[in-house]
Length: 246
Image (tube, rainbow, N blue to C red; front, side, top):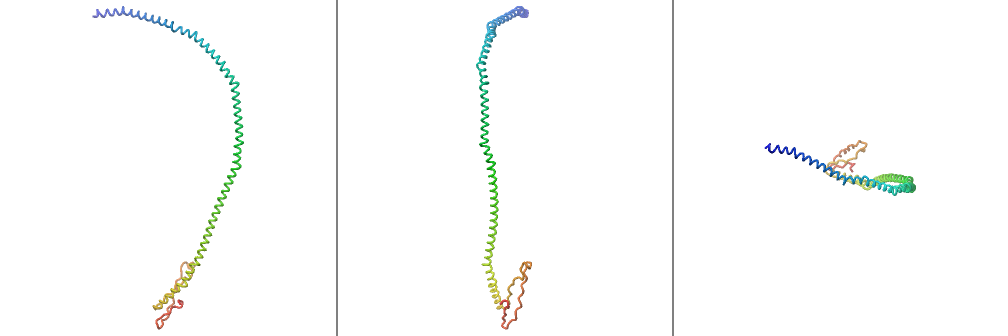
């Protein structure tokens, strides 16, 4: 099998197919190069030549002409207009605005600010100080007057109270005390003495007031004196009351 198939196939590949393939590859490379050269010659080089030597110079010339026209028709007039018209007009307007601003600031200062400052400094501040002083004096004097009125009302009410107490004492208390001392006490003493005489025993004498005031005796009253001994009994068995009772 090797002698019949492999060796003839290897020989055919090495001596026939390989040279034929190399020749076909060389032929195809040649055809490709020829076609590339023909394509470049027909489709690339003319356009490159046209662009490089015709369109680009023409475009540069047209661009230069247009730039020159734009500079001549637009830039130069605009520069002249800015340098000769707009810049002086702008400086004049700025000077005019600054002048108007200065005039308005001066007018506002002398017509508004200075009068307001003068009014505040020489009218409102002294008036406020005077008003504060007047209010302070009024409040102080009103408080002092109210204090005096309160003290006077206290003095008057105290005097009226004393007067009323004195009047009440002389109108009501002293008559009651006099009635108690002069009428009721004596009536009670007489009735006690009479009841004691009927029963045969003397009655105790009425309580006497303290010998000295409480302030002088240290707050204590002296002991009441005892009544004198009863007189001798009379034949009828009746006893006379003490003389001081009658």
